[in-house]
Every structure is written in structure tokens, then in C-alpha cells.
Image (cartoon, rainbow, N blue to C red):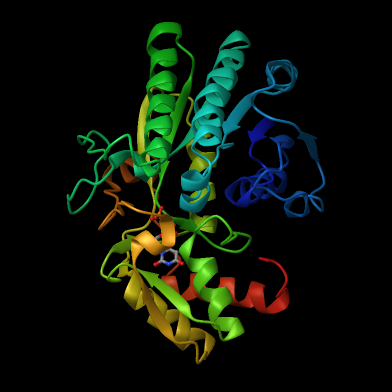
Length: 322
Ligand code: UDP
């Protein structure tokens, strides 16, 4: 099979390329290297990388024509980046996806859209189910522009299925983590591990009682491939993640323990971290019933194992996440 992976030089994208190459697929990557790194894929045989944006319709058209399926992962993401660059976030995420969907439809290519658990917003449900209501904050707070832009992407992908019968599915990824993820744009695990290994303070935002479920990229990627392969599933949205919940305060302690670090754990108010009026999601956990029923998905890697992998990578290459 020939696949196009937009955002293929990024963290999840590069792991996906690796999995596709491993099973013998030919892979084309479209990545503007804004947050992705060419080093993530340079050693992969059978991958052709085009450095350009999903906003470049001609390039998107040429690539889509070449392939059988499209994994659309390219997006502007990471809380820090989204807050710092709201225009780029909105334009890339909406116009970029519009362009990729339009071209996928032109050539009738099945498409997997990577969306996010952020679309659930600040709902206080125990677990989020795919058809739950969504609760968004004010438009004055840039943070929500990411969730809204991805929600528009979802609407559009569903509309393409309903109106034009464009084959495909959408996945909502919940805090995917693992080697190659950078902490530069806000992600907590690489930030904590890097600080711990350098003996610098580990900064817990807010009261540290907010919780997340961290999913290993090595568990998530096979689910994306399996959903793409299930051509009988169309116009559906699936949560993908883990159900192992931990508070950010506990995460800081676990990172300190697993690295053997003496870093102090310090509490930083949200305003100081992300600017005035920032709103965080208190808890975020997926209901996995739907994806379990569809493809038998079961996350296997524990948080301890995930942290060990991330710690080992940063120890090997301390300059990795500068
Ligand atoms: N966080 C933190 N310290 C950091 C980075 C993040 O305490 O240096 C918190 C953040 O406020 C959130 C959680 O860790 O509550 C997860 O953040 P991340 O950006 O990784 O993912 P999110 O769940 O916000 O999309």
C-alpha cells in the first residue's frame, strides 16, 4: 500500500511511518518541519519526505494522487504553541485540513483524521464518550482555539463522508506520549523528565490535582493502522488512549523516583505558565468501549514502562529536547 502521512516528521507521525514501513508500505510524508524534525524519519527506508505545508494545495494534490490512503496528522498543537500563536493554529488546522480533505475527495482516497481529546473541552465527566456534549471556554482564551479548530475538522470530515461518501474515520487522541516527543510546546512528560535529568525544578502547574491518562505511542499507532485497514468503518469517531489515570502532582513524584533525581517539585500558578485567565482541563479519561468493540484495541504499556523509555532516550541523547 502507498500512504501519505501529513505531519509524518512529528512525534506520532514518525512512529506511524516506522510502523507502515515495517509492514512493507511505501510512505510519503508532508511536513513543514515547524514542530516535526527531519531526524525523526531520515533513517527510514521507503519514506519520501516533502517539506511543505498542508496549505499548499498543489503539493497536497500531487501527493494525494500518488497514494492509496491518507493519514492526516499535520496540525499546530501543544498548549504553549497554541497560546503563543493563535492565528497560525486556527489557519493551519482549519484551512490545512480543508485542503487535505478536498484533495482526498477528488481522488477518492480513504482518510484518517487525527483529532484530539481537547474537543471535549472542560466537561467534568468521569470519562469521555465519543458522542458526549462538549463544553468550551470563552473565545477570549486562545487555548480553546485549538479544540475548536479540531472540532471543525471533525465536522468537515464527517460532512465529507455524509455528503460525498469520502471513506474514512476520525480518532481523538488522549495524551499520547513516548520517545521523540518534545517538551518545547508544553507537553508535560518530556518537560518533567528533562528537568529531572538536569536536576532542575519540576514545574507542576496549578494545584497538581488535575489528572490525565497517558497512552504509549507504541500502543496508539497500531490502532491507527488497524482503523485505516477497516475499510468497512466510515464516518465514525474513536477515542484512542489509555485508562490508567494519574494526577500531575503524582506524575512529578514518579518521574523523580524513576530518574533518581533530586530535583525539587515546585508549584507554578497557571497564569504564570500560560498567561492570564488560562483554563486547564481538570480530568481527562477516555471511554474505550467503542474502539475495543471495533478493533479489539487494548493499551498494554504501563506508565512506568513509558517513563523508562522516555528517560532512556533522554539519557542517551541529552541534547535531544533543547
Ligand atoms: N503541566 C505541568 N507542567 C508542565 C507542563 C504541563 O504541570 O511543565 C500540566 C498541564 O497544565 C496539564 C498537564 O500537565 O494539566 C498535561 O499537560 P500537556 O500539555 O502535556 O497536555 P494537555 O493534557 O494539557 O493537553
